Image (tube, rainbow, N blue to C red; front, side, top):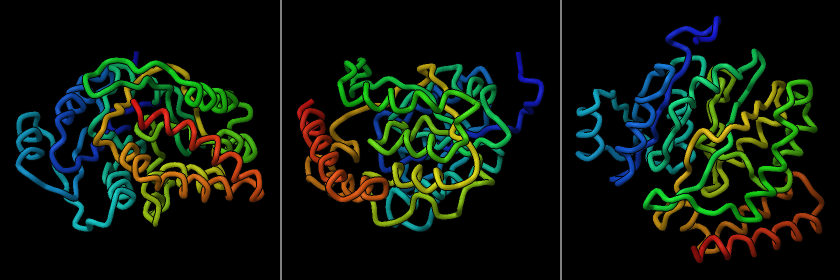
Length: 268
């Protein structure tokens, strides 16, 4: 049953496509097969025949970002390209369950800044990846934001991300009109999303957590995060983020803990 305050023009999936991903078609199919008929667009700063052919086959408009400055700029461009109140920036490698947009819309509150769902991790072949300790901790940190009575409090929002980034970026839906023009763009590459959540945690409004597992986040060798871990660039960005929440000595200890956890990720 459709939510009584929901129109057909409420939500858009903007698929952020890059180069020639073998997983793009699966992502497209998943957002087109939603129970709620969301709009679908493809945004790219690397237009090519692969993206265009898939877009033509499925009848999806492609919009080109002329500024090839990096992933953060691509996310900002995609987030503001939807032209509906709610926008999910879908990552080309990931897959969304049929009930994703419906559950997000039904959980949305008038003062919600972002809503995010629980998720599973899958490998390049689509098989589930066992939940590790690092992921369990992140999921626990998000728990308080599922409660409407406190999820708008600044301290609750910041506590959910102060010990790590448990919010899965492709699971996030934005109140597009409330978002700054430049939220993701900046110097960071791996932690562009964590930085964005920290910025939003200081704004008036709530973080809405939907604890149902409603999408699959793909972990594979070509993923940006894995490349950053192998190049040891992730550690420097983690330390910069922890410094936004903690004194230097605590930030360094937290960073050391996560560096060990990332070693296990890089060996998957």
